[in-house]
Length: 324
Image (tube, rainbow, N blue to C red; front, side, top):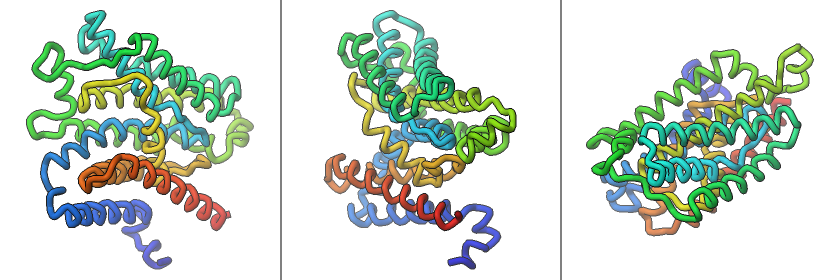
């Protein structure tokens, strides 16, 4: 095993990412065999991709937060809040579709700013802040929409052009957009001052502060980036599923975090992998679609996702103990 890890190709690509790709391929082969080839259909693939889009943006966003050593359990409800508020503005206040999409991003960004400000400048634990934001997002969405669900327009209706963000014919436009944003996030995290400071905060926040860096500003920026990506996730959610109901979104927190941690981002902070997060998201989406294809309910996916999070975190703890 040690010789394999020292291989130049393995070191460049990353042993963890190679294992994840192998798991992804193996899962696909097993699901195809278990469903007697029914999993090969384009409808199954497009359904899995619909899940990838919004979950992918959630995972990319929370990667930045976890890299600082924090956590955000509000991303799912905030995504729903963004989709409900912006959709309600379009349907009831007749905002142009383009402006409604901007509203979605703004709502997510404001929640990120709120979370980041309390965590960075008031030293409130991120767990407490995100739990509070989760309830605020649910309540705000219910109050704003008067507890009614919001149905976004179909592609043939006025303003339905937004659905082209996901698919044009059989072309998965959403996949292209997601991968482009993932590349931007990878560059931001690994090749810019913003990313370096965010990772350093997770490694040793006090040392960074003593070196003269404004740690509060950079920590808050991580949450703002997360909030912005959550607002974008809301756009892709409604582009794929159309109808949004108040009071939901909790389950997507665990799935997004699972994809992130599975991809190699340490819950202790200081270590993050955008490419690993992307592969982790594909695994979660494939798992969700495979379980449905086998005739099981989504409850089974929740169980497996929880196990994945525990295994990933335990693996990270063991790796850090060995390193120390």
